[in-house]
Image 1 (cartoon, rainbow, N blue to C red):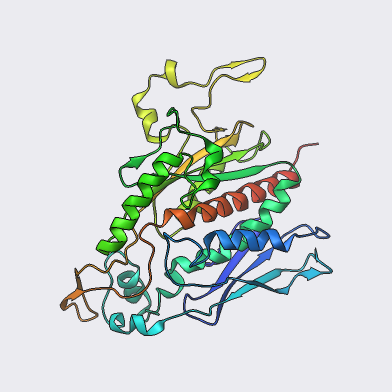
Image 2: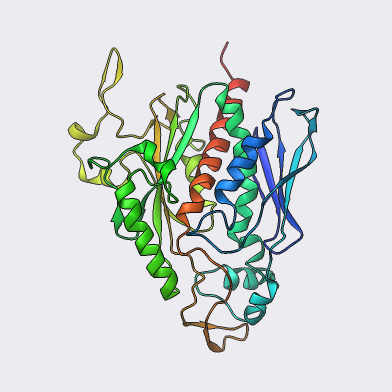
Length: 356
């Protein structure tokens, strides 16, 4: 598995830069003779595409998918499946000022010191635009999972100090598709809208939390040591550039509980609670896998900040360009995509080593 690849039985490799000709993904390991619905793939792309959400970047890309290989008469052929999307709305001149200056909280400093060269236009490979390639792969994985009625649904449950409480009378998980934030509370979504509108005017940004639920997974996915289901899930989420935290089940709140209150009791009908988030000993229980991912504030802001240049000379920087005041609204579908890839990879691995 290379530095730009993810997965074992199902391996994806993403390629391309934010301001290059195109970005894309090659998917290897898909079961052949499977009919893909390309409209569903495009629907997923539309959920994260730049310009598709009024609270995201004003960069406008159609993100229309183009298949290069691996499909014959609408079905997966068994060969590596490669899909690209062309970049059409780059404003590379916006990044000329930062050719020799490091943007705070970006990968500029580390990548330059590692490689002694970097692509400043939108961050190159370190740009959030790379996640569009993952969404393509995740949209395909979802279609394979649909066969077994496995669903993956994510929602924004926090932006800044605005938190959604699942005990609130206004909370409804289905409501997440009714607003631009994918928030399961329409009242809180209005507060989020007001906050992001204010931050956009101020030229600032803010972080947030996304919760994801994987439903109808079978018992037995994952291994008890290094290949735990939640460990691979965490790796998938932490591979997203803006993620700074991962928790499953009750997560960090688990530290506050006594074992008598935390443990998931059982009766003949199944589990009495799901505090462990659907995984025990690294292996799925068949309960919903529930996890949360914390995203840092978008590092590109138009306020003046302190930094240094390539020669370690102190500078002040005001970043130009078109950026999201909060990453979460467009990251919901990315979280779902990575969860789908992890789930399908484990299902394929389990099938290959099923006991006689």
